[in-house]
Amino acid sequence: MPKTAKQIESEIQALMQELESVSKKQESAPAVNEGDVASLFKQMVEERGRTNTILTNIAGKIAQLEKDMETLYSESEAYPEAPGRRQIPVSGLDAKILDYIQSKEMVCADEVKQAMGYKGRNAACSRLNKLHKLGVLERFQLGHKVYYKYDAGRATDILIISPPQ
Image (cartoon, rainbow, N blue to C red):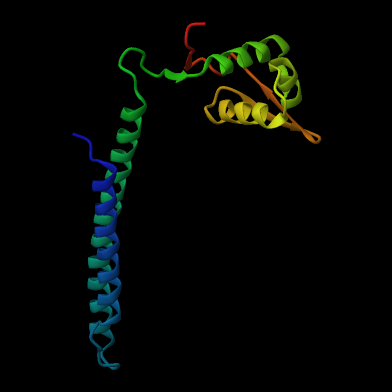
């Protein structure tokens, strides 16, 4: 069973505490006689081995947590009826805007404002930005204007659902 985001977060906190304890142990290592170089090297090699073991364990735990996070996010986005396909519900007005954009190829907020009969540009900008954030539209800055484009080839993994009209 995959771990939840909260469990993964608590494991990350535990790893951070373990790293802190290792660094504190390094600072409080016992002093060695300056004349005894051989024992100093032996102690350094042993400490390096212990540190490498700890770091290897931590790296393994982090790799496992990354796999758990990928599994968690991939399962939350998956749909059993259509693997690899995202369903995006849009309003009837957004569906009309998408139809308009498909007929014109590329539009700016002023064109959408005029086509939909809005009084101001803000409503058109808001709807276009929302569709862009959903991943339905591409956005291009050309000069001072922002243009939006619907690319059906790029959106093969998206299923747009609109209410009946």
